[in-house]
Length: 126
Image (tube, rainbow, N blue to C red; front, top):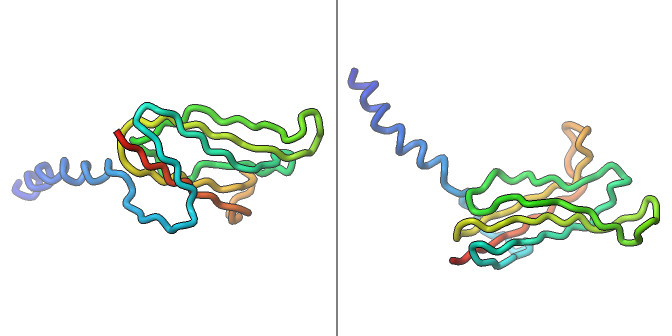
């Protein structure tokens, strides 16, 4: 009985800890994007989808930003096999710092390390 009561009392504390943002220190090689709450943040990454590779967001979900859209723009429109840029847009929801971790992968390949990684640090102020 006491054990069950203790677990019930501790459950909100344990769950509150799960909702916090990931605590991580900047490494210095991340791109830093400052933003205000309510603004949109755009991340642009070089890409070539004809190779089968694409950028994937691999960081955990965040309560500070919301994914809005992802687009690809060819460097030379109409040219088959050419590269370009992949643009990711996020809406800022609350103040704080969030790391957006991207991996350049072929989605069907499992157990293979990404050929490239990119981290963007978004610093959101009220």
